[in-house]
Length: 316
Image 1 (cartoon, rainbow, N blue to C red):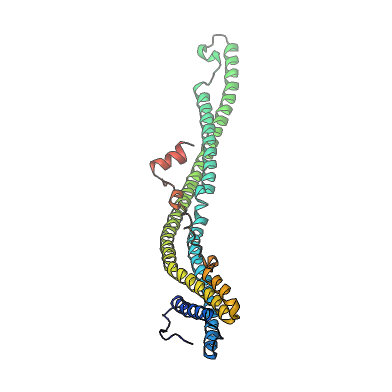
Image 2: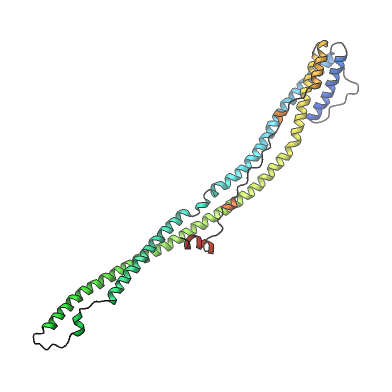
C-alpha cells in the first residue's frame, strides 16, 4: 500500500521522476523484505507509473533530438555567414584583374608605338638635317664655257637629287605622321581603358568592403546566438539525464515488484547497483566555426593612392 508520508511529486519531469523513484524504491525494498503479493491498488498505481516513465523516456529522447538540432542550427547559421562573404572574397585577389590585363596590354602596345613614333620621326629629322646635296653645288660658278658643260652636268645632278630628296622627305614625313597618329589613337584608347579598369576596381573594392561588413556583423550576431543556445541547453541536458536515469531505475524496481518473492533480493541488488547509461543524451556542443579573415582580402590601396600607382603602373 501507499506510504503514509507520501507527498505529491515535485514539478518538472526530472523532479517528478526522482519523487517516483523514491516511492517505487521504497515499495521494492518493502516487498522484498516482506512476503506477499502487491495489492490491487498498488498494481494499478505501478501500472500508471510505468506508463508515465515510458512517456518520460520518450520525451527525453525527443527533447534531446530537438536540443541537438538547435545547437546544430546555431553552428550552421554561423557557417551561412561565412558563405555570405566567401563568394566575394574568393575573387578578391583578382580585383579588376580582367580590365587590368586589358589596360596593361594596351599600355604595352602604346609603348611600342611610342618607340616606333620616336624612331620614325627621328628618321624624318635626319633626312631634313642631312639633305646630301651634290658636291658640285658648293663650287657652282658663272660658266665661262659657252657650252656650259660643267654647269649643265651639275644642274642635272641637282635635278636628280632634288627629285630623290623630295621623295625621301615626303616618305619619311608620312611615316612619322602615321606613327604619331597611331600612337595618339592608341594613347587615347588606353586612357579610356584605364578609366574602365580603375572604375571596375573601385566597384569591386566597394562590393568587397560591403560584403566583409555584412559578414562581420552576421558572424558576431550568430556567434552570440550560438553562445546563448549552448548556455540554455546545459541545464535541460542535465535534467533529461537525471529523468532518464531515474526512469531506468524505476523500470528496474518495477520488475522487482512484479517478480516472485524469491527472486526479489537479487533483482533489488541489481537495481541498487544500476548506473543508467545516459551517453546517448550527451549533446555535441560544436566549437565556433573559424572566422573568415575577410578584411585581409581587402586591398590596402585604391586608385590614385601612391602605393596603388606604384603597384599598378610604376612597377609594371
